[in-house]
Image 1: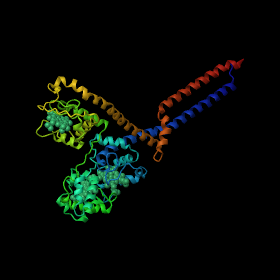
Image 2: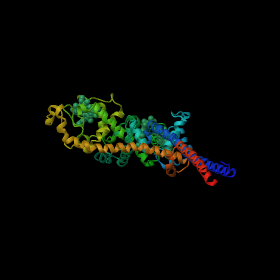
Image 3: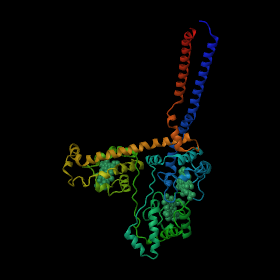
Image 4: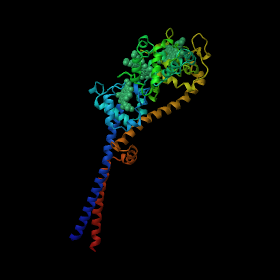
Length: 469
Ligand code: HEC
Ligand code: HEC
Ligand code: HEC
């Protein structure tokens, strides 16, 4: 082994250069991945914030701004591009300070509201980056779905009768507006609801036209009563005032109660199904086909003709004087709405023929001895529709479970894009890098460096004898 200083030096230089190159490459890969790693963790933080914000929205905002930020009546939508592109600071200020002299309250604790600055920030993020479909599901699952938006159609016959009164056209116009905009809160025939006072009350009627006009125009600050000046023309508002003042002339029944469908999600349907089988099936039958003890609910004559609020009321109050119990003190409103939603999904497939199954009224033969024979004969009319319902319900479930996932994805994309980055590019470029974990990258690169060094050293020592010849 004669040392050849020249060659050793060459090999050493070669090794040095290769090593340095590999380290540079490793560092480069690491740096390249670093923003993705930061973005991913920022995305996670954003997703957590958005998740909390959906609950805050459900508890504090949905009652005015709607199930999915769509706006209700005179209350503006929050699901709007104008708000999404508004500087975040301005949006935060609107939520924190409210809008003076409107129904929009101030929310920050500094202004006497109930939310911390952090929570106000979360809501800002929700409005700018959130997933309104997922928010809607959250609101429904918390049982906080507002009873609105809903409207009703004035009774046509009574509406014609109103036209014959002096100034009947104004009253007619006002009734039509009332049925579309006010009935949700102020109730059928202006009788009031749990959320807003009666308007056909003598005390309200006694107010001056100015007073009434002012509250309709500007709303009542910090309450559900929004100002209607953006939605109604001054003459419409004047007509509403006339209606309120002359309400005793309007025949009752002119503005019927609206039919408000309960909102459902996969979760609420599952909850409804559980509650039904635990509490109702022993009387109404496992598939709502009725038993000796109680009538069928899964039948066209009942389900088609009974609007959701009516079913909700029957379940809440029970049917006095029968064995149908009142569930209002045993279940929450959310539970009862979930049951209503569950009954409602029978509608498309409910058998058409009503099956009166009251004891002593001579039901179908299979009712004579309930326990053993119920399953077999009912299987024909009832089981078939039931199986037809299931795929639909599963599809809904799948769709609903996919939604929150989509929301989180958007969150990550936003984080990757940085504060002003465009969402789509961030998501696209990040896609394959997102899947790389930097630790694995570092390990692989380290391994490669060692492997290359070993190969080079081996190559060098192999070459030695050849060159010696
Ligand atoms: C009592 C009803 C009510 C509640 C509850 C409410 N808002 Fe509002 N909000 C309003 C009204 C009414 C307006 C329109 C005010 C105006 O006329 O400028 C408004 C306006 C807004 C605006 C400005 C919209 C725009 O287009 O300029 C934002 C943002 C907003 N609300 C967010 C929220 C958030 C977030 C919550 C829950 C923390 C909430 N609001 C709760 C009634 C309400
Ligand atoms: C989202 C629910 C909601 C809607 C929709 C609504 N209101 Fe109201 N309204 C309220 C509430 C709540 C109050 C009580 C405000 C208060 O306590 O100061 C109120 C109060 C009023 C008052 C004052 C009553 C009084 O006792 O002085 C009038 C008048 C009125 N509303 C008219 C209307 C008209 C007309 C419409 C339709 C164009 C309408 N409201 C739509 C919730 C609503
Ligand atoms: C102890 C037996 C019993 C239980 C338990 C029971 N019900 Fe009933 N239910 C009845 C009877 C009996 C009637 C019919 C009352 C009548 O004669 O009008 C009835 C009527 C109804 C009606 C009205 C049907 C119609 O045709 O108008 C609905 C809706 C209803 N029940 C829903 C429910 C739900 C939902 C549950 C479970 C939360 C439930 N019931 C639990 C006995 C029961």
